[in-house]
Length: 167
Picture (cartoon, rainbow, N blue to C red):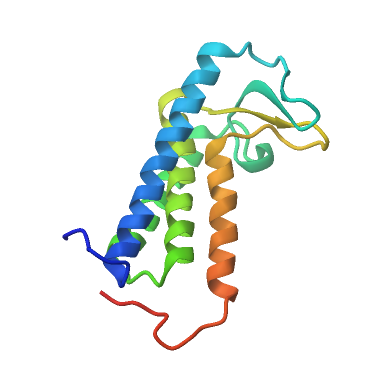
């Protein structure tokens, strides 16, 4: 597969999705490494006062601590999701920037949290919203939420003829 010279088709969207996924995984893993090396476990420290604290916790569950204590099962789920999304990116024609961004963010999030589960048996979380009670999260979680947003935009935006790219 060669890198396309223009933004006119599926190969470009495929490369965009893969670039977003790679950047997302790198940022997620580097931020988690920094958090593990810098932050004391469980202690909240103001980062953006009144908005965001840094608080290192480990999560053996999934979103909102669901399935706590099942890191092997969740690691397998992460692997299956990552594989399915990667196959989608590589095999199916992507239809524009929103789908590409959504799939790239989804792959980044699944791989980022999956790597934690496989390497250390728990997901490293360190971002805590201050104004509302919300579980502590990480950049992989942010990527998954961005994926949902991008895919919703992709699915709900008006279609014009010529919007679908194949190749």
